Length: 195
Length: 421
Ligand SMILES: [Zn+2]
Ligand SMILES: [Zn+2]
Image (cartoon, rainbow over all chains, first blue to last red; front, side, top):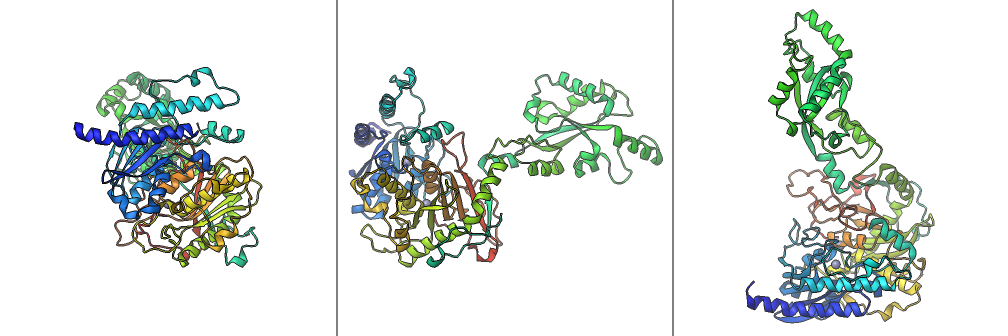
């Protein structure tokens, strides 16, 4: 990637980071994205799983739902996605079925990643056309946003967890991404069961 | 498990005729791997009284041999427990044994003795020691030092991983080498857990799938989508409480009109996605907030589009304080696509049952059980994702079954279908 291309992609990833910051302020997992066609942002999205009580309302879904209100489905074939965290398996498949042109992301998603993190839904054998992916654009910023969310959530918990988990870590570790926080003690049990 | 007593009443007047058939648990990705993976190993015929000494000699020759890597394989076996093909290699049906130890009568006597006294010893994987080196080690030891009794080591294939059920252990013992089953399944749900859940689901599963069929038929008749339907059920109280019914709506425009069938249609309006969204809105209502206060663009298509869907939409029959789709079961007419399979996992469902396998697009199956139909080179491969049970990679797992109709002719048999369900 030459300097000019780098600047082009970073410009849009900055917009995606802005969406992730908005998600963080709204108590949602800070994942943000923008869809770009002909050098213009045609849709924006952020994670909305807590607000909707729907574990599938990821930033990519929210953005595409907005786009399809105004644009035909076929326009996605000339559209690129910039997202702060690698698309999960679900979103990676959704993007491939819609025929997305290319995907650029910030950090890898070692929990659910569908474009290299766990599975390779973007290029595995499928009836749909594969798409190219480029990861690592503003990776550290994307991770720091997730980490801030993690600390913020732990501080809200009625009984704060072990102190070390509340500190803002700067080293880069895998963590659970996208999953909405449980709303009952029962589900917290379920969560820890499968960790 | 034949579903013979449909318990869900009140669905008959909707034209829902229960399907008759059975539930077949899906194989997990690790189970499929475990069933296929083998390695080559040496086996050795040893007089019973020397078995211990030979074991020690092997340990000495291969000091870093990790027998824990093949704990599931019996180390010392009697002739009668060997698979037939190995028995024949040591004792061919004709008296043409490579060991020239006397006349025919003599050898018959020897064989009769051998049956009681010979043991068959699993030495090691072939990667642990060269065949020539192994023989060199053995001829220095009793009883192989005797030129009349050269060490007779064969190479056989053995299963690399533990069996996941007693049936599999029995089958492998016939096919490869005697195998021990420890009543655990490290590669998937325990068979007793599956059996218990299968028994619980079987009586109503045919009815739930028939309702999913109806949901698919209704959207298709209106031109909104493919004939794919989905039903979400709460069975925590022991009876099926139908929480959401949704059909596919990929051909429905944001303004609610049928559109032309240009691929791929509106992917996020797959039946599973719509049904999950309807559950989320029910949860909001039960929690006392107005679902309409949360913006939900029309392409999500998360409101009922047919009368059948409406019927199950209005009642708030979902326990308060629930989390996503924890404790709920999901029935689908087809094996869900990769996107929908992962949506089910994200939503933390308890159990999933689907009707028709989708070898080219389905995300749940891990095996390649479907046989290639005649003259069709493409179908029957399967994507192998097995998204329902990959606990080392994904943070949730659930039980999954496919449904097999008793009368197979009623099943849709177009296996080349590229449809994403
Ligand atoms: Zn996602
Ligand atoms: Zn689907």
